[in-house]
Length: 267
Image 1 (tube, rainbow, N blue to C red):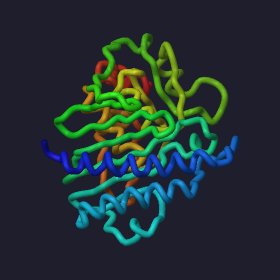
Image 2: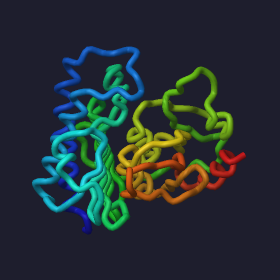
Image 3: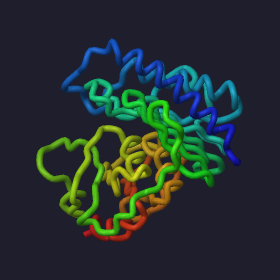
């Protein structure tokens, strides 16, 4: 299967990072009022473990990652083979010790995502995908099971995943889409995995700006599970551009809800 070596490398790197994170998590003093932009030593240790493992296997590859660490500083930031890494996505969940964080590792070849791995260390949930090979979930020590997005076709019956709101009251996506149920969590990786696993029907992010590492690994999970991922107005998301910026928001759905959600969000 194309990209199988990259998938196995990403899985191994995620597991190494997950153990580092859990060791730190066990002794970490919770910060109830953690800032949205908080970064911890566990973020940096996780990233170094991931990048060192990947560099050892693919020394010519480029790296795009969130934290400023030595291995990243010495690497090319763009290239035809690019690893996109968020060592702890949802660091506020780590800092608050509520379990809402994930390790995200994506691999992009010539602009196309080939591999995505999202590991939720505290909950022992793993979701991964390889281009053309489907999306798979593994919880605890169970055998991997193939993922398929939900079959919900009506927004009024849908479950929406979104970030925990900064202000009280319904968010813009909730007002626009009128979902039946809302699931809130800090980690974009978790939210994208929820869509791929059919545990929610769609995920909306209206953030003005974010980065490749916030999305890449989870993007392919949804697509390989049969769903659709675009910007809020249906834009194609591109990875590996200078600065690693993403400025079009995010809409990830089971596919059946996508057009209706784009239209509602534009209204």
